[in-house]
Image (cartoon, rainbow, N blue to C red; front, side, top):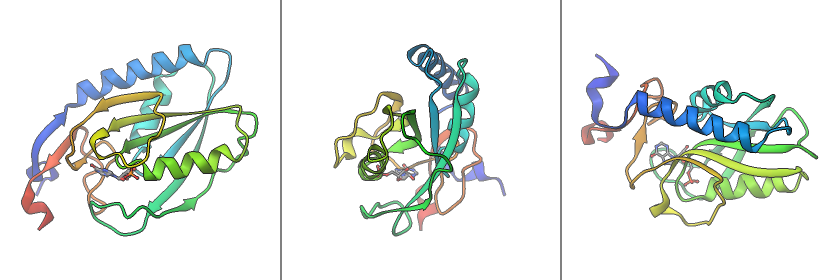
Length: 180
Ligand code: IMP
């Protein structure tokens, strides 16, 4: 059995993803020139994105991770966020760029930004691969957006359904029977 058998439609192919991540890396390198930003990757969904993005950045930069979890499983966010793993380093006085896979309702990012802002970074911005703007319940400032996507549940390139499909190299929608 191959994971690809469960794919209904590829929304963003691998080459398109790769090209956009390179563009974002160039843009960030130019915007943060002279600043040594700290990339904060949000586990687990953003692992491939942040590792590709960091390699597309040509200025000196640092990397740390946080893990959050929305209570509940499946495809609905209940709005309650927990920090499962906090940063290893202090962000006081640093230029922090939060790197996440997707902003959907915005509840997770809103909570994260409030938490990080309270730690006195020199600057705080967000780079997100996917923006599902239609579903937004909290307005969150997104400085860098890879792609705006419609309201569909996507997997691949680090994003999962029930813990699976992260290793698909493209972004796709699964067949409805997978959810039954
Ligand atoms: P928000 O708090 O509703 O913005 O949701 C953010 C989190 O929900 C993301 O970091 C993902 O973990 C998860 N999520 C939202 N939409 C999708 C999707 O289409 N596929 C996979 N995970 C998703």
